[in-house]
Figure 1 (tube, rainbow, N blue to C red):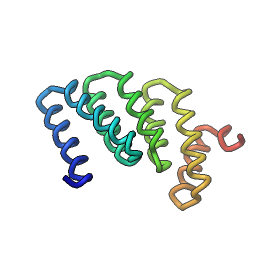
Figure 2 (figure 1 turned 90 degrees about the vertical axis):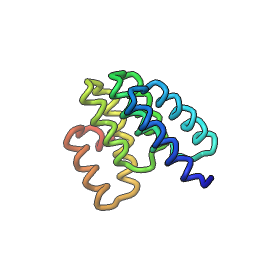
Figure 3 (figure 1 turned 45 degrees about the horizontal axis):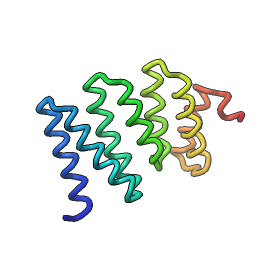
Figure 4 (figure 1 turned 30 degrees about the horizontal axis):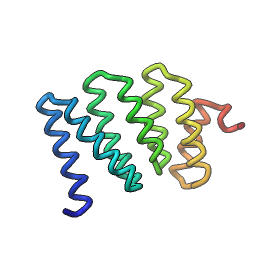
Length: 135
């Protein structure tokens, strides 16, 4: 089985389990595959699977799990948009300090890459947290 087929299969199976109301088993399947992806240094897979697990954990209403999966994704994120997205999510849950940590990471990614999108991210973060740009 091709590697990408494995990723698709796990996402499909966990989606089906979730649709059937079996979110704990869906998350268990995803946890196993995330651990496998970490061992194989497949950061993009970790991010993809963690995002999927975040959605299922959110359906369960387990904000602790949501946070864990977001942090796991962020640890393997390669794009500034990931950090920005997760920052917004935790800020909406009242976790301003964690949101600011994500904003700092996103700001650092964006300053290093300096594309048009990155400049827009820097501008947006600077409006919300002016002190980040002054560090």
